Image (cartoon, rainbow, N blue to C red; front, side, top):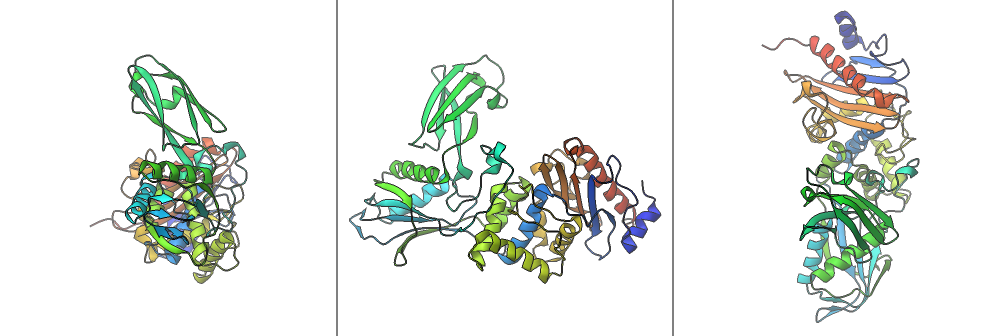
Length: 459
């Protein structure tokens, strides 16, 4: 434990810690902490070392997006055509032009199609064509092949709907277990092999049922307790394009529409006219999902939005990365340690130093969108991925979490009762990382308490 004198010296002069925090080997943790209202560094340990930050990398992407796009930025979805509309019949192809709306879901798509019906389209005699030109390169998240069927690895796409997730919803009909697919996807067959389970609580329905996906067939088996009536779990099914097309077809027919005759991928002609445009939720709402719930797909979509809005090389991902680097240069923040693969931290390759991530957070707190960024972070002991951690600091501590096999990380802000703010970045890279979460929380707690001891008492 540092002495108060050592803490004061660090606050004044930027002196690094003399030893690794308790519970860690010297090379397992890297840490940087500094007051927002001063230029000094309060505490540092291996702060210049490039580390894998896991999902705390989302803070860099969020900061860049707020600065470059603004909190009110919205993704646009368009439906276009070159065909005539005669007596309710679209006599040609309908183009669905996507731009990667991270929150596009079934209810929003249903409303778009309802608006198309209100604008006179009753039957589509041509094809439904997905215009995917907005992304030339959606990037990678290499090294997660074993998790390919998990939602957290779903890559961004111009036409990603429901994060490519369908729900299995359970009910009982005359005492027999039933299951429905939501949204209904006409290309999938649901094979219900469920049996009635014993009485008792349901808990997580996944402990009672099993869903096996074989091509276009979903076989659901297990013993479902009556208490699971109304429960649901998700399945990751189909390709992105098939999911979008089948969802469109099911919703369109449910609204009384007819067609389309087929589907495919093609760019809308230059002479096409706009039938309908719909805007996404604003960027700030998206960042709440990105940071509070660590949504990888949405974070990657945010980085790609930077590339879409500021095209330079014709490579959406690299154009987004270029905007991040340009902003760092404008802020005079040295980025030699930075390696970006997708901006979400879902990466074995991404690297950033705690010092650079901390300086980004300090710049954000001093900038016009500081309150907006801070509001997207989980509150200790209250919500998001920090709901069950660091509850003794509830109300004053906002931290983004990061978790990979060999990584545990925390980054964000603590605000003292007197209003003073402290930036904290702490990253563990170690084969023991999964067992070091309590030690990481203790290290962050120790930094906060030592910093608080240097502050003048409240009057």
